Length: 245
Ligand code: FES
Image 1 (cartoon, rainbow, N blue to C red):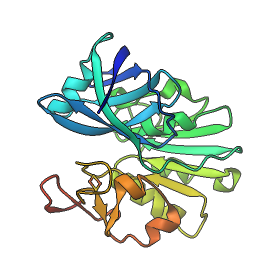
Image 2 (image 1 turned 90 degrees about the vertical axis):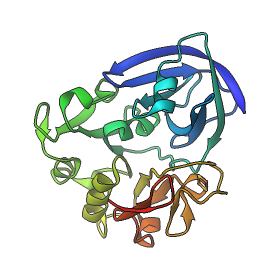
Image 3 (image 1 turned 135 degrees about the vertical axis):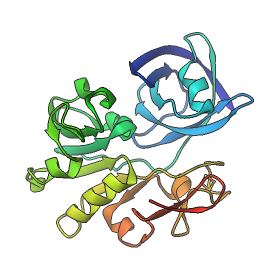
Image 4 (image 1 turned 180 degrees about the vertical axis):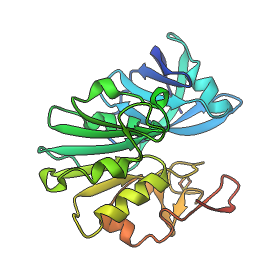
């Protein structure tokens, strides 16, 4: 277990905080770390910036995330990692498609060649809209941008314009993007989320079709996903019970 000192903590919406701290190990876009809340638990969190001081973005949805989101500058933050297979970098034009807190792991990919589709249930849930110049905003309820889902904005774009498309968010959203892009392009990568315990390929809690998301992912190409029929359909709960999405 490593530790660092919290450098900053910025609340970016009602229930989401971005924390920065310094790490010695290099971090690549798409990787994650296991953050330990002493006496409470440990959860995986992706990086929203991979440059020191690195940045993680955490939404409060349980006790470990609540503890982490409330760490103040100067306090210790305990972690293992970074872990996982990162996104494949490209130098050309990129499109990122993110929904909810799934927007955060895509942020390290943003440069002046990046366009984005960022979606959320409602305007107040959107994050990082100030970090992308070429941006399409989508909300389920129409409170900002296009009313609908990320795939609705994608259908209005010429995907041949992009050298790579990166996708992260709720699996139902990613499945709709996958279904639309399948047989149109192979240059797509998805970052999957599954319940994680060990984070290093031992416990099987993050398994999808027998593949460990923590070790073999979390980033998978659209070609990889063709062989995973559980994608967009089922996942294991934290207690190991199969859940239909
Ligand atoms: S979290 Fe244990 S195998 Fe992936």
